[in-house]
Amino acid sequence: MDKITHLPRLARIKNYPTNPIEMFKNVLERVKAPHIFPMNLATLDNEFGVLNRSVIYRGLLEDSWICFVTERNSRKYRNLKENPKLGLTMLFYPYAHRVETKDVMPEVWQIRLMGAEAVELDEEQLKILWQQEPLFAKIRSHICECGKPSNTEELEKLLQEQLAIMEKEKREPEQTKTYTAFKIIPKYWDFYMSEPNTIADRVQYKQMENGEWQAYHVDA
Image 1 (cartoon, rainbow, N blue to C red):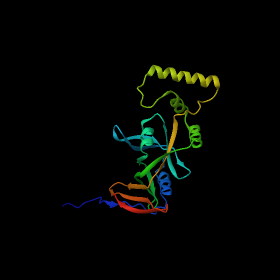
Image 2: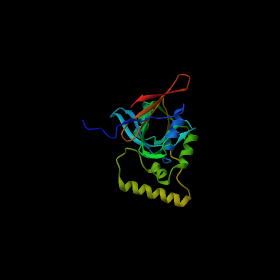
Image 3: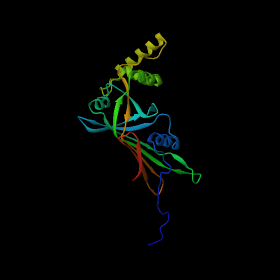
């Protein structure tokens, strides 16, 4: 057998904190994540079984819980009210600095929240998120019903009506009754990291009965 070049090595997540939230923040900083980004959310659905879709990360509520926005007329909202259990995955393909060598290596990071449940936010928290919404999202909440068969002419009429109201009243649309958001409370956080020609590493956090987190490496 010819001599093998570019031998694989083990990727290793080093110096990880004891708390998964700090680990999450470290990864976002390392991958230079944008302020908002897509996450894959899986729920249980009576018609389709396991049903997944992309939702947008809207930050850490109270510096502790990942949250996302949805509508009360959406299928995901019905799913979560019937069964709050869910799975959530985030995937990043950026470049990050390796401190030990000062060079730049392409890294893949996958973050999963497991054994998780969704809890709907209260009205005061929803008001804050609504104020952060772009104009098109506020209007969409007024004129669209998630999953309803679309009629372009009808939607255009509703859009023009909303724009006319804005022009007359000199203000953006008020928060709708359908607008809502959830925070995600997991029992496990799972952080996967790999680099080119490496065997990936995972660090998993498990919440103990006393509320503290146990962190340990897991084979990828």
